[in-house]
Length: 567
Image 1 (spheres, one colour):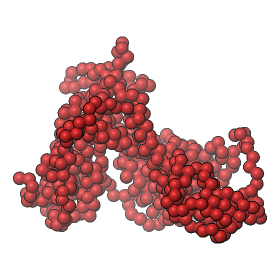
Image 2 (cartoon, one colour; image 1 turned 180 degrees about the horizontal axis):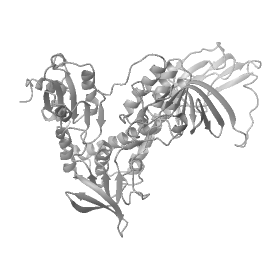
Image 3 (cartoon, helix red, strand yellow; image 1 turned 60 degrees about the vertical axis):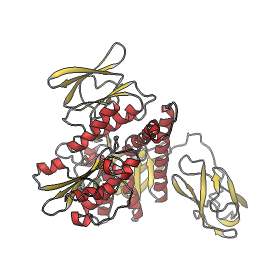
Image 4 (cartoon, one colour; image 1 turned 90 degrees about the vertical axis):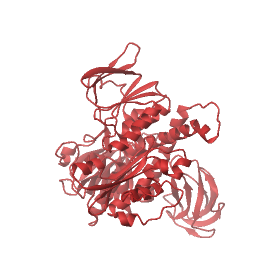
């Protein structure tokens, strides 16, 4: 019986894909589940598997061809006997059928599909473990859907906007510039959707049992998940809790109002507010301050501590302060938010105490950016018997990410160790490796951070103020981007590279970069610090010219006051 080979699905929401490797030729025998060819798209490669057993009669595609969903690309002479089940007539129940009951026994069950959970799932599946992952929202977690990626997509759009605004310096005249905020946000969503689709493909490609639903603890060793199509009951040997985090809210009068924004709300705005006051001058607050100022909002930042970006050295923060001042962002440090009130015209009034005096800031919108807290209510932890840390703000874990309960691990923001996506991913791999009886403990000393302010910031290892607090004898080398040829050609002279080394051992122990390409350049220094590279060895590395990375070499030379291009 001849049957058509039809492209019945593509990755994510893709409508087209490119034919990759073709594994079969006309005349070959096909078995059910055998891969005929791959279809490549921006979300990865999809294996197209045969749903029939029989002889391949015709294939009308070649490697590199573009195909679309629903397209017929060949024919199979199907064996009726081998396809008895596949050829049964399909019936339609219009959603009235009883959900299927599924009992699954897995080596590892992961609750939470963020950068910790999905990486752990892939690592486990690659290692031969039977892995299931449950996510009640969207794959990718906070980072991909409500944090890192959408924020950086908006920051990229803002960077393009600023480049156009400053084009005259390059002799390029554009005329009037207009902003389509709706289109900007649609692009952001497109980037997110593409990456979410890519993770979904990775789950399928690695054989991970992915369930979109809410996990409910049945009893120790068993988890239930109910979806419209199926009721799952998982029996697991190992459980990994990757429950993530949610925005913190400063508990002051008026903060309970439904129209007080969070970082997640700032990623889903329908229009740019005329004015915006951000409570919190940490990483989240400062990134959004630069984004919304560039988009046209009048922005204020209120920070309780003496310095915005308080985790960084003063000289690094000062570059950001100067940039914010130049762009018109108002920063209020040592400022305590007291209450939020509404004015007669619908604006919002933030009462702030500065130097013992109470003053007010009026703006159309107020946003909270005071950090994130571990999602400890996402599942009944008490039923598992899992303990919290000493401050009760995260699940307690050891260096292998084990909780106090045997064979239960916790990773990512829910541990409240370091709330960064790349930390969660590494924790996920550490947990899986421990399950496999190998691996290493987490080491948090050399975790790099990337901050997408304007200009960018990268930081790794100890800071100068931490070294001073520890009374370490240190050497400091700094090189400004204003003395770097590539930075000047790009019109990006602000900032510097700063490197810290121990004076006695001459080993590099910390670094900060503020300026163009800072977040990408930081990987070079992170590797040096993790490998305990000495000043003398680091100075022998040759950097390409003209690149911004040459500033790293110059900063290394400045540790011995031997810089070539800066006196």
